[in-house]
Image (spheres, rainbow, N blue to C red):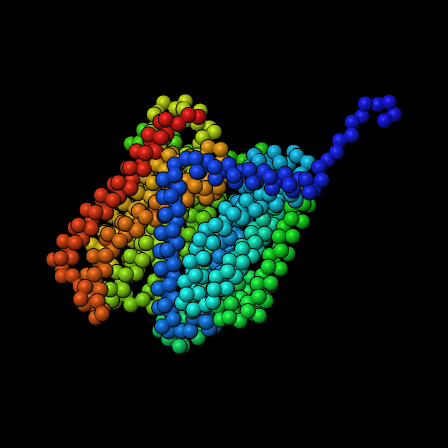
Length: 580
């Protein structure tokens, strides 16, 4: 020691760090499960029951779809492989974007990442910890969507029991590929574009929209009548790009179909190819994180302090003039949420992508081989379009509106200085959510009805339905967001993917089903018998149609009022009692 008082400091080994992270994650999971079980058991059972109902409904839809397609083609042939390839290619792109956004927020914007970087843990170990957290949050919806589809497909083609076990391995391997690529993209953006994240996101969203428009154009311009031999042949030729041998979606579709046929040599071969590439991309992501994560983190934090303020002040002035009748404090709260929405690329980019794709689809309705001269088909397609619009709106409100109040938790003392009551804060967020929802969905539904040449009365009915749905979904998201807040989390994607966000999405789906079914059923029975002879026994006369429509309108208004004001009342009571 040479007479000095030096103390030897032993750094933890890589194995000790890995065990510490595993222990930490295990304790978090254990505490989460314990808090759920110690809370309201009825609430947990309700979420499980709603999840089971949602899974069952999806299974029924996919099963009926496969049975319908099976009437025209063999479900084990090349056509289904092309459709599966396109489906998984779309999911590959969506998982790439969603995982990249969540990884970027977790690595470069969370307080936990800032703390972990001060510990002796290596950067690749920190990355692995945050990466698997992002994978869970981004892919649970993928597993919930694909699992009923695969079960329905297996039952339709009478696959063996081993198919249901192997497709789970396929799904887990598949999500690792876009997740790893998204993580690499997030780290590269932080290193090379630390002040241009919005620009990169805009360009990426534009490319996705261009690609989706290209695919839709290829489908809509396919010659021949729908499901005919010439039409199917032309469609397969135009979708041949999804069958490129280097695409993971191709390995996924080919392997699943081979496993369904009982061809286990090909099925296991594609599974090994998929798993090997999943491991390779994961290894590439960890190496990139090891070399560039700390450097990118420093650049992102340094770029924040030098950002310039946006010059879009005229939007704020226009808002104040248009909504002068709203109390000034509430108007300021709505304006704050509008600015947050405007400045967050994750919100407006996903909003534009989803609703932009819907608008593009509605503009091409007349080119999709629909019989727009048939009242039955026009009515059916119009209600399907309305239901799809409402479903996308429910995902938007659950993803972005539900976490709004949770994100205010740490800064509530600032809002408390305003001269207004707590319930005014919730009403302000409700006005913000319903205002954005109404503008987007009303335009889309009116566009869809105009393309389908619907009557003025039906357009007015659909506009009323959209207003009820927007108000109800906004009330559900704001009310449940106040009743089930997560004040400890700063990432809105994690708040939306948690217990409260999942319950909010399930309640929203039940609300949509009730409203759409109440109004769509009498319309369907009325129009079905006019030009579809197989439905003649269910046809309604014009007088009975008006009678049942009056009942349906009153029922939907009652359901809409309950769905809007009951969650808001529950949220206001909980918000008044909340301690910050």
